Picture (cartoon, rainbow, N blue to C red):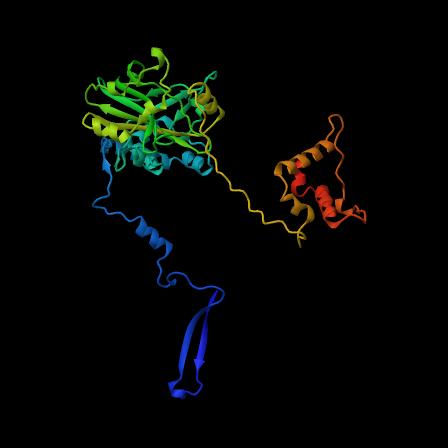
Length: 411
Protein backbone atom coordinates (compact mmCIF):
# COMPACT_ATOMS: atom_id res chain seq x y z
CA UNK A 1 0.00 0.00 0.00
CA UNK A 2 1.14 3.55 -0.70
CA UNK A 3 0.15 6.72 1.11
CA UNK A 4 1.21 10.33 0.93
CA UNK A 5 3.48 11.45 3.73
CA UNK A 6 3.58 15.10 4.64
CA UNK A 7 6.96 16.22 5.89
CA UNK A 8 7.65 19.79 6.95
CA UNK A 9 11.25 20.85 7.47
CA UNK A 10 11.36 23.94 9.72
CA UNK A 11 14.37 23.37 11.94
CA UNK A 12 16.91 26.21 11.74
CA UNK A 13 15.05 27.61 8.74
CA UNK A 14 13.20 30.93 8.68
CA UNK A 15 9.45 30.65 8.34
CA UNK A 16 9.47 32.49 5.02
CA UNK A 17 11.88 29.86 3.59
CA UNK A 18 10.07 26.82 4.98
CA UNK A 19 9.21 24.21 2.34
CA UNK A 20 6.55 21.55 2.34
CA UNK A 21 7.77 18.23 0.91
CA UNK A 22 5.29 15.59 -0.26
CA UNK A 23 6.51 12.03 -0.78
CA UNK A 24 4.90 8.84 -2.03
CA UNK A 25 5.90 6.27 0.58
CA UNK A 26 5.44 2.53 -0.01
CA UNK A 27 5.67 0.12 2.89
CA UNK A 28 6.97 -3.40 2.28
CA UNK A 29 7.77 -3.18 -1.45
CA UNK A 30 8.86 -0.81 -4.18
CA UNK A 31 6.88 0.39 -7.19
CA UNK A 32 7.71 -1.51 -10.38
CA UNK A 33 7.33 0.04 -13.79
CA UNK A 34 5.69 3.34 -14.60
CA UNK A 35 3.29 4.95 -12.13
CA UNK A 36 -0.45 4.55 -12.80
CA UNK A 37 -0.75 8.17 -13.93
CA UNK A 38 1.75 7.58 -16.75
CA UNK A 39 1.37 3.91 -17.69
CA UNK A 40 -1.17 2.84 -20.33
CA UNK A 41 -4.34 1.14 -19.22
CA UNK A 42 -5.20 -2.41 -20.31
CA UNK A 43 -7.74 -1.10 -22.80
CA UNK A 44 -5.15 1.22 -24.39
CA UNK A 45 -2.57 -1.54 -24.58
CA UNK A 46 -5.03 -3.91 -26.27
CA UNK A 47 -5.96 -1.21 -28.78
CA UNK A 48 -2.29 -0.74 -29.67
CA UNK A 49 -1.74 -4.48 -29.87
CA UNK A 50 -4.75 -5.10 -32.14
CA UNK A 51 -4.33 -1.99 -34.24
CA UNK A 52 -4.51 -2.70 -37.97
CA UNK A 53 -3.72 -0.52 -40.94
CA UNK A 54 -6.86 -0.22 -43.10
CA UNK A 55 -4.74 0.40 -46.20
CA UNK A 56 -3.07 -3.02 -45.95
CA UNK A 57 -5.41 -5.11 -43.80
CA UNK A 58 -8.85 -5.54 -45.34
CA UNK A 59 -11.13 -8.40 -46.37
CA UNK A 60 -11.85 -9.28 -50.01
CA UNK A 61 -15.14 -10.77 -51.15
CA UNK A 62 -14.36 -13.74 -53.41
CA UNK A 63 -17.95 -14.98 -53.69
CA UNK A 64 -21.14 -13.94 -55.39
CA UNK A 65 -23.00 -10.76 -54.54
CA UNK A 66 -26.13 -11.11 -52.46
CA UNK A 67 -29.52 -10.97 -54.13
CA UNK A 68 -31.45 -7.75 -53.81
CA UNK A 69 -35.14 -7.96 -53.02
CA UNK A 70 -37.38 -6.10 -55.42
CA UNK A 71 -39.41 -3.14 -54.24
CA UNK A 72 -42.64 -4.94 -55.13
CA UNK A 73 -41.85 -7.83 -52.80
CA UNK A 74 -40.80 -5.43 -50.03
CA UNK A 75 -44.11 -3.61 -50.42
CA UNK A 76 -46.00 -6.90 -50.13
CA UNK A 77 -44.14 -7.72 -46.91
CA UNK A 78 -44.87 -4.28 -45.47
CA UNK A 79 -48.57 -4.65 -46.23
CA UNK A 80 -48.63 -8.07 -44.57
CA UNK A 81 -46.91 -6.59 -41.50
CA UNK A 82 -49.53 -3.84 -41.25
CA UNK A 83 -52.34 -6.39 -41.51
CA UNK A 84 -50.78 -8.55 -38.77
CA UNK A 85 -50.30 -5.58 -36.46
CA UNK A 86 -53.91 -4.54 -36.89
CA UNK A 87 -55.12 -8.09 -36.11
CA UNK A 88 -56.19 -8.11 -32.45
CA UNK A 89 -55.98 -11.89 -32.07
CA UNK A 90 -52.45 -11.98 -33.47
CA UNK A 91 -51.24 -9.26 -31.08
CA UNK A 92 -52.93 -11.05 -28.17
CA UNK A 93 -51.11 -14.27 -29.03
CA UNK A 94 -47.80 -12.44 -28.97
CA UNK A 95 -48.57 -10.77 -25.63
CA UNK A 96 -49.60 -14.12 -24.10
CA UNK A 97 -46.40 -15.73 -25.50
CA UNK A 98 -48.41 -18.22 -27.52
CA UNK A 99 -47.49 -19.71 -30.87
CA UNK A 100 -48.83 -17.23 -33.45
CA UNK A 101 -50.62 -18.45 -36.55
CA UNK A 102 -47.73 -17.84 -38.96
CA UNK A 103 -46.57 -20.04 -41.80
CA UNK A 104 -43.00 -20.78 -40.73
CA UNK A 105 -42.05 -22.11 -44.16
CA UNK A 106 -42.86 -18.75 -45.73
CA UNK A 107 -40.87 -17.00 -43.01
CA UNK A 108 -37.89 -19.29 -43.66
CA UNK A 109 -38.03 -18.65 -47.41
CA UNK A 110 -38.11 -14.91 -46.82
CA UNK A 111 -35.16 -15.17 -44.43
CA UNK A 112 -33.15 -17.21 -46.95
CA UNK A 113 -33.71 -14.55 -49.59
CA UNK A 114 -32.77 -11.59 -47.40
CA UNK A 115 -30.67 -12.03 -44.26
CA UNK A 116 -29.44 -15.63 -44.40
CA UNK A 117 -26.10 -14.92 -46.22
CA UNK A 118 -25.27 -12.05 -43.84
CA UNK A 119 -26.08 -14.09 -40.73
CA UNK A 120 -24.10 -17.09 -41.99
CA UNK A 121 -21.07 -14.92 -42.75
CA UNK A 122 -21.22 -13.30 -39.29
CA UNK A 123 -21.34 -16.69 -37.57
CA UNK A 124 -18.50 -18.02 -39.73
CA UNK A 125 -16.39 -15.00 -38.78
CA UNK A 126 -17.12 -15.70 -35.13
CA UNK A 127 -15.82 -19.27 -35.49
CA UNK A 128 -12.79 -18.19 -37.54
CA UNK A 129 -13.82 -20.14 -40.65
CA UNK A 130 -12.72 -17.62 -43.27
CA UNK A 131 -9.55 -16.69 -41.38
CA UNK A 132 -8.38 -20.32 -41.23
CA UNK A 133 -9.42 -21.28 -44.77
CA UNK A 134 -9.01 -18.14 -46.90
CA UNK A 135 -7.06 -15.75 -44.62
CA UNK A 136 -7.99 -12.23 -45.84
CA UNK A 137 -10.90 -13.33 -48.04
CA UNK A 138 -14.55 -14.14 -47.35
CA UNK A 139 -17.78 -14.85 -49.21
CA UNK A 140 -21.50 -14.72 -48.60
CA UNK A 141 -23.15 -18.20 -48.62
CA UNK A 142 -25.84 -17.34 -51.17
CA UNK A 143 -26.65 -21.02 -51.87
CA UNK A 144 -28.24 -22.68 -48.79
CA UNK A 145 -26.91 -26.16 -48.08
CA UNK A 146 -28.98 -28.95 -46.54
CA UNK A 147 -26.63 -31.60 -45.17
CA UNK A 148 -28.20 -34.46 -43.22
CA UNK A 149 -26.55 -37.39 -41.44
CA UNK A 150 -28.80 -40.43 -41.24
CA UNK A 151 -28.60 -42.26 -37.91
CA UNK A 152 -28.22 -46.01 -38.11
CA UNK A 153 -31.16 -48.20 -37.06
CA UNK A 154 -33.28 -45.09 -36.54
CA UNK A 155 -35.65 -43.22 -38.79
CA UNK A 156 -34.09 -39.84 -37.99
CA UNK A 157 -31.26 -37.61 -39.08
CA UNK A 158 -28.95 -34.88 -37.79
CA UNK A 159 -28.75 -31.71 -39.87
CA UNK A 160 -25.64 -29.59 -40.20
CA UNK A 161 -26.28 -25.87 -39.70
CA UNK A 162 -23.65 -23.31 -38.69
CA UNK A 163 -21.64 -24.58 -35.75
CA UNK A 164 -24.04 -27.07 -34.15
CA UNK A 165 -22.58 -30.16 -32.45
CA UNK A 166 -22.60 -33.50 -34.26
CA UNK A 167 -20.97 -36.45 -32.49
CA UNK A 168 -18.56 -38.71 -34.44
CA UNK A 169 -20.89 -41.68 -33.89
CA UNK A 170 -23.63 -39.77 -35.76
CA UNK A 171 -21.35 -38.85 -38.69
CA UNK A 172 -19.93 -42.29 -39.50
CA UNK A 173 -21.45 -42.45 -42.98
CA UNK A 174 -21.43 -39.83 -45.72
CA UNK A 175 -24.32 -37.35 -45.45
CA UNK A 176 -27.08 -36.46 -47.86
CA UNK A 177 -26.48 -33.13 -49.59
CA UNK A 178 -29.21 -30.99 -51.13
CA UNK A 179 -29.20 -27.49 -52.65
CA UNK A 180 -30.90 -25.56 -55.41
CA UNK A 181 -28.95 -25.44 -58.68
CA UNK A 182 -29.51 -24.02 -62.12
CA UNK A 183 -29.94 -26.31 -65.06
CA UNK A 184 -26.61 -27.38 -66.59
CA UNK A 185 -24.47 -25.93 -63.76
CA UNK A 186 -21.40 -27.68 -62.32
CA UNK A 187 -20.34 -27.71 -58.65
CA UNK A 188 -17.55 -28.87 -56.34
CA UNK A 189 -18.06 -29.85 -52.70
CA UNK A 190 -15.18 -30.11 -50.22
CA UNK A 191 -15.38 -31.15 -46.57
CA UNK A 192 -12.28 -30.35 -44.52
CA UNK A 193 -11.16 -29.52 -41.01
CA UNK A 194 -8.53 -26.90 -40.10
CA UNK A 195 -8.11 -28.48 -36.65
CA UNK A 196 -6.08 -31.42 -35.53
CA UNK A 197 -3.58 -32.09 -38.31
CA UNK A 198 -1.15 -34.43 -36.55
CA UNK A 199 1.86 -33.60 -38.76
CA UNK A 200 1.56 -29.97 -39.86
CA UNK A 201 -0.68 -27.54 -38.01
CA UNK A 202 -0.70 -25.21 -41.04
CA UNK A 203 -2.46 -27.83 -43.15
CA UNK A 204 -5.93 -29.29 -42.97
CA UNK A 205 -7.42 -32.73 -43.48
CA UNK A 206 -9.70 -33.31 -46.45
CA UNK A 207 -12.56 -35.59 -45.38
CA UNK A 208 -14.59 -35.50 -48.58
CA UNK A 209 -14.05 -34.19 -52.11
CA UNK A 210 -16.71 -34.31 -54.81
CA UNK A 211 -16.03 -32.68 -58.18
CA UNK A 212 -17.94 -31.86 -61.35
CA UNK A 213 -21.36 -32.29 -59.73
CA UNK A 214 -23.97 -31.82 -62.44
CA UNK A 215 -26.64 -29.53 -61.00
CA UNK A 216 -27.56 -31.06 -57.61
CA UNK A 217 -27.21 -34.75 -58.47
CA UNK A 218 -24.55 -35.53 -55.88
CA UNK A 219 -24.89 -39.30 -56.27
CA UNK A 220 -23.80 -39.05 -59.95
CA UNK A 221 -20.72 -36.89 -59.37
CA UNK A 222 -17.01 -37.67 -59.63
CA UNK A 223 -15.72 -38.69 -56.20
CA UNK A 224 -12.17 -37.39 -55.95
CA UNK A 225 -11.62 -38.32 -52.30
CA UNK A 226 -13.93 -40.65 -50.43
CA UNK A 227 -15.64 -39.79 -47.16
CA UNK A 228 -13.70 -40.01 -43.90
CA UNK A 229 -15.63 -39.73 -40.64
CA UNK A 230 -14.68 -37.10 -38.01
CA UNK A 231 -11.73 -38.17 -35.83
CA UNK A 232 -11.31 -35.51 -33.11
CA UNK A 233 -8.52 -36.37 -30.68
CA UNK A 234 -9.23 -36.93 -27.00
CA UNK A 235 -8.49 -34.03 -24.70
CA UNK A 236 -8.45 -31.28 -27.35
CA UNK A 237 -12.08 -30.19 -27.46
CA UNK A 238 -14.23 -29.39 -30.45
CA UNK A 239 -13.06 -29.71 -34.06
CA UNK A 240 -14.68 -27.74 -36.88
CA UNK A 241 -15.78 -29.70 -39.95
CA UNK A 242 -16.57 -27.40 -42.87
CA UNK A 243 -18.53 -28.03 -46.08
CA UNK A 244 -17.70 -25.54 -48.85
CA UNK A 245 -19.67 -25.56 -52.09
CA UNK A 246 -17.98 -24.04 -55.16
CA UNK A 247 -19.64 -23.21 -58.45
CA UNK A 248 -17.64 -24.15 -61.58
CA UNK A 249 -17.70 -22.32 -64.89
CA UNK A 250 -16.38 -25.37 -66.77
CA UNK A 251 -15.49 -29.02 -66.35
CA UNK A 252 -12.28 -29.39 -64.26
CA UNK A 253 -9.67 -32.12 -64.11
CA UNK A 254 -9.00 -33.13 -60.47
CA UNK A 255 -6.82 -36.13 -61.26
CA UNK A 256 -3.93 -34.90 -59.12
CA UNK A 257 -6.13 -34.97 -55.99
CA UNK A 258 -7.32 -38.54 -56.46
CA UNK A 259 -5.95 -41.04 -53.96
CA UNK A 260 -5.21 -44.70 -54.71
CA UNK A 261 -7.54 -46.92 -52.73
CA UNK A 262 -6.08 -49.66 -50.60
CA UNK A 263 -5.24 -52.84 -52.48
CA UNK A 264 -7.25 -51.62 -55.49
CA UNK A 265 -10.45 -52.50 -53.64
CA UNK A 266 -13.46 -50.43 -52.80
CA UNK A 267 -12.02 -49.32 -49.48
CA UNK A 268 -11.62 -45.74 -48.28
CA UNK A 269 -8.29 -43.96 -48.26
CA UNK A 270 -7.12 -44.35 -44.66
CA UNK A 271 -3.68 -42.76 -44.98
CA UNK A 272 -3.89 -39.43 -43.17
CA UNK A 273 -0.73 -38.22 -44.92
CA UNK A 274 -2.51 -38.44 -48.27
CA UNK A 275 -5.39 -36.38 -46.93
CA UNK A 276 -3.28 -33.29 -46.22
CA UNK A 277 -5.14 -30.32 -47.61
CA UNK A 278 -4.81 -26.56 -47.94
CA UNK A 279 -7.95 -24.70 -48.97
CA UNK A 280 -6.14 -21.45 -49.80
CA UNK A 281 -3.69 -23.15 -52.17
CA UNK A 282 -6.53 -25.08 -53.81
CA UNK A 283 -8.55 -21.92 -54.37
CA UNK A 284 -5.57 -19.95 -55.68
CA UNK A 285 -4.96 -22.64 -58.27
CA UNK A 286 -8.57 -22.76 -59.50
CA UNK A 287 -9.78 -19.25 -58.65
CA UNK A 288 -10.46 -18.49 -62.33
CA UNK A 289 -12.89 -21.41 -62.54
CA UNK A 290 -14.30 -21.76 -59.00
CA UNK A 291 -16.44 -19.39 -56.93
CA UNK A 292 -17.45 -20.30 -53.35
CA UNK A 293 -21.22 -20.13 -52.97
CA UNK A 294 -22.35 -22.36 -50.10
CA UNK A 295 -21.17 -22.98 -46.54
CA UNK A 296 -22.16 -25.22 -43.65
CA UNK A 297 -20.14 -26.51 -40.73
CA UNK A 298 -20.49 -28.39 -37.48
CA UNK A 299 -18.42 -29.09 -34.37
CA UNK A 300 -17.48 -32.51 -33.07
CA UNK A 301 -15.59 -33.78 -30.04
CA UNK A 302 -14.25 -37.16 -28.94
CA UNK A 303 -16.44 -40.16 -28.20
CA UNK A 304 -15.60 -43.89 -27.75
CA UNK A 305 -16.17 -44.68 -31.43
CA UNK A 306 -13.12 -42.57 -32.33
CA UNK A 307 -10.85 -44.85 -30.29
CA UNK A 308 -12.27 -47.91 -32.02
CA UNK A 309 -11.78 -46.30 -35.46
CA UNK A 310 -8.13 -45.46 -34.75
CA UNK A 311 -7.35 -49.02 -33.67
CA UNK A 312 -9.44 -51.02 -36.15
CA UNK A 313 -9.55 -48.89 -39.32
CA UNK A 314 -6.47 -46.65 -39.15
CA UNK A 315 -4.40 -49.36 -37.40
CA UNK A 316 -2.56 -46.87 -35.24
CA UNK A 317 -2.42 -45.60 -31.69
CA UNK A 318 -5.01 -43.06 -30.65
CA UNK A 319 -3.56 -39.58 -29.96
CA UNK A 320 -4.44 -38.40 -26.46
CA UNK A 321 -3.74 -34.90 -25.22
CA UNK A 322 -3.74 -34.33 -21.50
CA UNK A 323 -2.09 -31.96 -19.07
CA UNK A 324 0.94 -33.38 -17.27
CA UNK A 325 0.55 -32.10 -13.73
CA UNK A 326 3.85 -31.61 -11.89
CA UNK A 327 4.37 -33.53 -8.70
CA UNK A 328 3.51 -31.49 -5.61
CA UNK A 329 6.44 -30.23 -3.61
CA UNK A 330 7.00 -32.03 -0.29
CA UNK A 331 9.36 -30.33 2.11
CA UNK A 332 11.98 -32.43 3.91
CA UNK A 333 10.63 -34.41 6.82
CA UNK A 334 11.32 -33.09 10.34
CA UNK A 335 11.67 -35.04 13.57
CA UNK A 336 9.02 -33.14 15.54
CA UNK A 337 6.49 -31.35 13.24
CA UNK A 338 4.75 -28.54 15.08
CA UNK A 339 1.13 -27.42 14.59
CA UNK A 340 0.40 -30.20 12.08
CA UNK A 341 -1.88 -33.22 12.33
CA UNK A 342 0.06 -36.37 13.06
CA UNK A 343 -1.60 -38.69 10.54
CA UNK A 344 -1.93 -36.07 7.74
CA UNK A 345 1.75 -35.20 8.09
CA UNK A 346 2.83 -38.85 7.79
CA UNK A 347 0.55 -39.44 4.78
CA UNK A 348 2.52 -36.86 2.81
CA UNK A 349 5.57 -39.11 2.84
CA UNK A 350 3.74 -42.33 2.04
CA UNK A 351 3.08 -43.79 -1.37
CA UNK A 352 -0.35 -42.53 -2.57
CA UNK A 353 -1.19 -46.06 -3.67
CA UNK A 354 -0.73 -47.30 -0.10
CA UNK A 355 -3.03 -44.59 1.25
CA UNK A 356 -5.69 -45.41 -1.35
CA UNK A 357 -5.37 -49.11 -0.56
CA UNK A 358 -5.84 -48.44 3.15
CA UNK A 359 -9.07 -46.48 2.53
CA UNK A 360 -10.31 -49.13 0.14
CA UNK A 361 -9.76 -51.88 2.71
CA UNK A 362 -11.59 -49.82 5.32
CA UNK A 363 -14.50 -49.56 2.92
CA UNK A 364 -14.55 -53.33 2.37
CA UNK A 365 -14.73 -53.89 6.12
CA UNK A 366 -17.91 -51.83 6.36
CA UNK A 367 -19.67 -53.35 3.33
CA UNK A 368 -21.48 -56.70 3.53
CA UNK A 369 -23.09 -58.31 0.46
CA UNK A 370 -26.13 -59.62 2.41
CA UNK A 371 -26.50 -57.12 5.24
CA UNK A 372 -27.66 -53.55 5.14
CA UNK A 373 -25.17 -50.90 6.28
CA UNK A 374 -25.39 -49.65 9.83
CA UNK A 375 -27.64 -46.61 10.25
CA UNK A 376 -25.76 -43.35 10.84
CA UNK A 377 -25.66 -41.87 14.30
CA UNK A 378 -28.50 -39.48 14.97
CA UNK A 379 -26.32 -37.10 16.96
CA UNK A 380 -22.67 -37.81 16.01
CA UNK A 381 -21.14 -35.06 18.16
CA UNK A 382 -23.07 -36.20 21.23
CA UNK A 383 -21.18 -39.53 21.43
CA UNK A 384 -18.20 -39.35 23.73
CA UNK A 385 -14.71 -40.73 23.05
CA UNK A 386 -12.40 -42.74 25.27
CA UNK A 387 -10.20 -40.53 27.36
CA UNK A 388 -7.04 -42.35 26.35
CA UNK A 389 -7.36 -41.58 22.61
CA UNK A 390 -4.97 -38.98 21.14
CA UNK A 391 -6.42 -35.77 19.73
CA UNK A 392 -5.61 -36.56 16.10
CA UNK A 393 -7.43 -39.89 16.30
CA UNK A 394 -10.47 -38.24 17.90
CA UNK A 395 -10.53 -35.76 15.03
CA UNK A 396 -10.42 -38.54 12.44
CA UNK A 397 -13.21 -40.42 14.18
CA UNK A 398 -15.30 -37.28 14.31
CA UNK A 399 -14.75 -36.70 10.58
CA UNK A 400 -15.78 -40.27 9.84
CA UNK A 401 -19.00 -39.85 11.84
CA UNK A 402 -19.88 -36.56 10.15
CA UNK A 403 -18.76 -37.63 6.68
CA UNK A 404 -16.01 -35.06 6.26
CA UNK A 405 -12.77 -35.32 4.26
CA UNK A 406 -11.57 -38.46 2.55
CA UNK A 407 -13.95 -40.65 4.54
CA UNK A 408 -16.62 -39.61 2.02
CA UNK A 409 -15.08 -42.16 -0.31
CA UNK A 410 -16.13 -44.89 2.08
CA UNK A 411 -19.85 -44.10 1.84
